[in-house]
Each structure stands twice: as structure tokens, then as C-alpha cells.
Image (cartoon, rainbow, N blue to C red):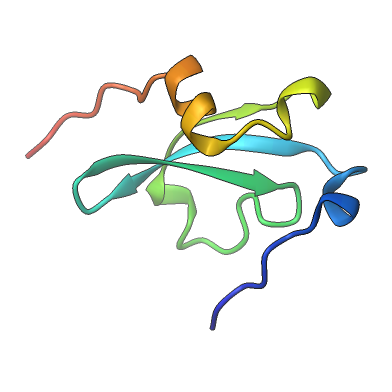
Amino acid sequence: MARRPTTDTEADGLPSYFVWVRGLDGPEPQKWVDMDFGVGDWKRPLVLAWLELPADERRLPLSMLARRYPPPKVETL
């Protein structure tokens, strides 16, 4: 089921997180709001690193956040 995008007005009062998750080709950046963070046991093993964003960084594009906060080093099997 697809999740509808969070609008700026919905996310204003909620903490936002910059999250690196385990993707098919390596770490992938994502932005989550507090409601999404850690929902269900299936997400926890996928989370590699996370950081609560200060209010002034919440509106930054994902590409800029990924440059500011590089991906964690991940061991490959």
C-alpha cells in the first residue's frame, strides 16, 4: 500500500528524521516524520543510521541532506 506524501503543514509540528536504510544497492537516504519512525518490526533491521533533523534542516531536499550526512559504512557479505 502506498503512503501519501506528507505535506509541509502536516510535518511542521512533528520531528523529522534523516535516515539511512539498507537498500538493494547499498545505503539509501530517506526522510521520515516521527509517526513513520520504527513502525513495525520489519523496519528496524533495515535502518542503518538516523539523525533527528533540526527545524532549519527539515525543508532541505534529500540530496542535500545526503551530502551533509554521508552514508554509514556497511559490511557486505
